[in-house]
Image (cartoon, rainbow, N blue to C red; front, side):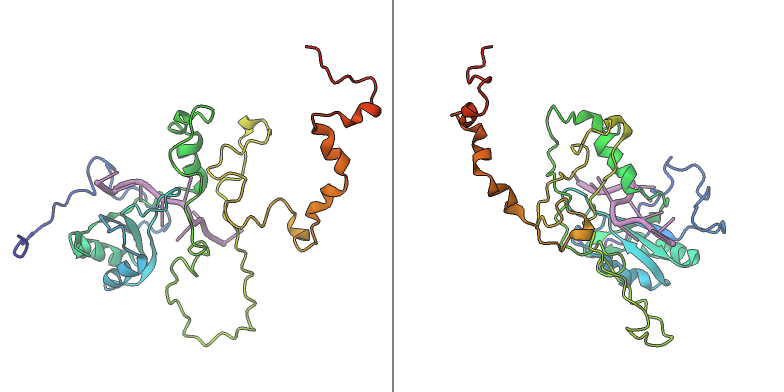
Length: 267
DNA sequence: GTTGAGCGTT
């Protein structure tokens, strides 16, 4: 059936559908009032990667950034992505040209992005304490999602290194590795939301955050201060007093020590 | 220094 489906003009009109009355209202981020540089690409394949978009989209200009958001919990791609250009003209061109194009067998829908990217903090409210979060009365029943913040493979959190590093090499000259000290690779676990809400009363309330305080993985950075991370932790130091652990034993060993305490707590 | 849980996903 497919072969001559000459869609002269794809069903356009998604961009302005009651969403934003003023198309050129304010695309903050450029201060110059010119058009937006970010495009929202919809209908992406769930297997699509930023790299796949860069080629077709790079034809119209220099692509500044590409990002494909995914679900925080499941880690599944959401089926859309953002392509940001350096020049708004390129973005417009790309939108016009790429809108309706078929990538990987899917018709792409390209529209201008609102550039209203959400911050992690905001995102949290969306499911952690926002209007919708209310539904998840933590004492009622936990959400279906796995408490794990998506099985991040350890990459793509490093910003411009693993997640998608455009060959942004300066043709100035090979920067000597010595010249610039490598930024310490702080592989921060990126624990989402570590701030506590004032409503929580300071009482350790970790139930709010999607990830438990318990580390699902290596569990190496437990609670030790970063300063003494290398300090020889004597974990088993607690074992030096065996009799202490017996205090919970059915037999009151302390009977000799605490005569005043009977083992029969009369209710 | 910006933000990688970025809006419009089946």
